[in-house]
Length: 478
Image 1 (tube, rainbow, N blue to C red):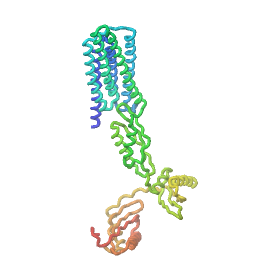
Image 2: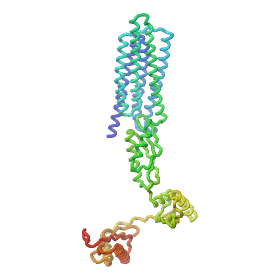
Image 3: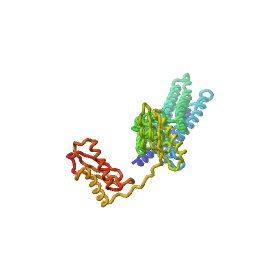
Image 4: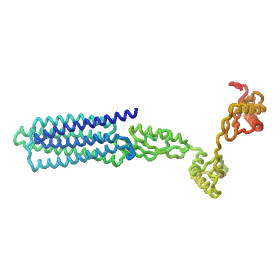
């Protein structure tokens, strides 16, 4: 579906650019013929302006075709910058137009007299030009907004200014016609055509500056106004994000590239951190729909992080592991006792130096700790998971374990719920029932006695968990 939408967007952009080329060809030819027939500098200026519009429209057409090509081996970020180059090219063409119009207008105002025929042909072609430019400017603007195309937007703005410049020329021609009707005393109105041409030049300069600034800003990777702050504000509300770091945004044609850093609790598992990054990407795309997002996740200390988590994180940064972390207070002083695992090949001196660095890191994060005592040991070697128990073996073990537990709790009062083979032996989970009037301490003593009994009678037992329930409790029978 996404590929179909992209193909449809490409087709619509090319169709809009192609129609603009056709309109530019018609207007250029028509204005040139009428301008030569009437001698109007205003119309000739408009003809040259339209000729440059034609060149710009052709450049836009090819720029739109190239910019929609996907990224390849040489262009990792796609070809979107072609649209920005096309917009800059249009700017240079418009500035060139201004130089010629201003020069010719000054010549006619002060040094050379040219007879102008304000015929109905002249008025007709300008009116026709205004109608065409209004329609194609709206068409291009709709396509530019829908697909985020800077090249089409530049073309739309270009033709929108043509409407105003044509209106200025129309006023100039009207004043020339009025001067001819009112007699020789009003002959100075003939210069209104040249003045109108200067007005066209002023409009074109304004448009050129705007287009040029935007094109150069995009080529220099200037962040789109307000987008950086909008992205940072949106991402800050994503669950799991502690804070938002640097946000970098740049535009390339219709595409936007966003790189940002978010801080996530270092206690989060890898999958949890990845889920936060995915949520951040979705939130960024809600602000900038057509964008490529890269999220860098930085682990940071959580505000409510537990002491063992803090100690474990400090060890992990140095390539160590910890377990058996115990903290206690003696007369207002806090102490930590823990086990530190490290590579077995280290010498005692190297291991002691590593632990010194680890303890310094812990004190930096937990300044209230007065003293740390570490027991050094090599990394625990993971054992291979043993094969699962066969049905016959499990049945035999369950009978023997149940009989051993029944020797303490009584016949029919114990049930073996699960047996599981682990590297440390056979883990067993049992449920036993006892007199409901027993205290917790007495029930615990029974469970401990049953565990000792079954360990003595059944070899290879690992962990044992005995769940004690009050006899007569509603539920499934043992």
